[in-house]
Image 1: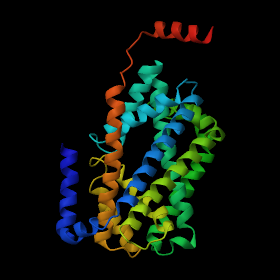
Image 2: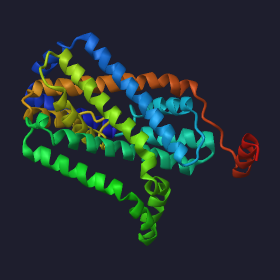
Image 3: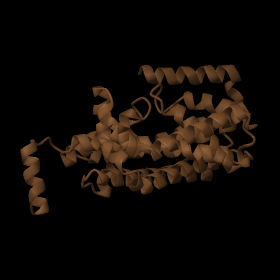
Image 4: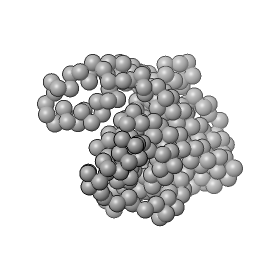
Length: 312
């Protein structure tokens, strides 16, 4: 409730500072067909995310069906409606998968990797677009840090096998945390498909918000959204408010304002995208209500069941 109140408070300050009436009039301009198209793209993104998660669990040797991963992803989307940032949804789907496969450690590790490599793709896409002439509408103080962060995270990814070999030298808390995701660090080549899916997902999210802008009658190139949306999503994903409410709108006012889009249009974009994610999250209620939480079983029973399944 505190997080929800913080989001409402931030949004109220924004609307008071910039006058709510023009922003609300902008909302009324949105064309339904473009709004529904953006919602469909977001739901498609959840399907791609579930596929990415399944691939990441397979790297750890966890047998997970795509349907299970998809169901748990929608459960996570529903949970995110009531939890700050994206942490609540991640915890929910890790819990469901861990109970289903009886391998909670691997479920948590795959969920962490799913979020982490998604963020890497977000940084890389924003950096790649920011380095092109298409992003010249944004000032250097936005483009330069974006490119720098993308380059640094890419170098860290390339050096991940070396980092993995140095885990034993780290202090114990860090060693234990990195040990969970060590299999991913040792084999970065195996992450090509998850990263490709992450890049496709970020493009879909940016394209969805570009569609909303078209529905509002705005004339802005897709390239601007490919730069601004990933940067804004980094802030919106922080566990400050529910669903990034208020934080996203603040980032949009600042970033889209640099690209020549008025603050009323930026506020409307943020509110409409929040509505899209809320509708998509509500569809997860079906998965949440119809999916039984797998029972807790003893380690010995789980090993016997796995042996019977594999014929060992």
